[in-house]
Image (cartoon, rainbow, N blue to C red; front, side, top):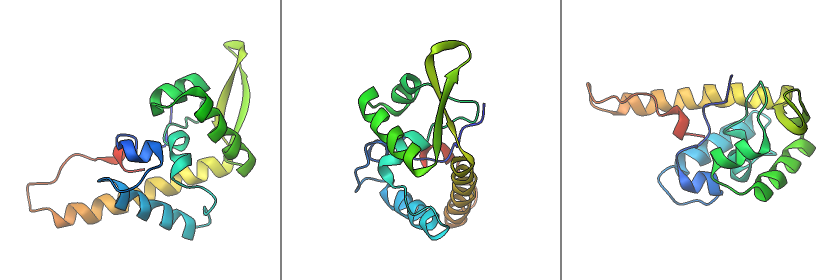
Length: 143
């Protein structure tokens, strides 16, 4: 299972698409840098789904649970991301009634790019900390 690992998973205002909290500056930088690299069609609202994309596929109900959002909201975001070409829905081989959401090539590309951007942001912030004060990676809380 490979998830993006870089979206602002643990920052409530990132999951809700609201700004102004402690992760907002990091989130703003991440989206600005992603936009400069050609991903200017996604924003904080989409982070609720992009944070938990899994190359193997994930069900809508699981996305909703992980993102802390209701299924209707996640379904609407998925519709947008599907139209933008970031995800596609396929039948779940374990249960034909269910659909798996998988990243497209463009979805995998933003996952890779976000990993690189977050690593850069983390490295920059780690250099600012006093020696011996570096923390373990906060990658899950950045995108």
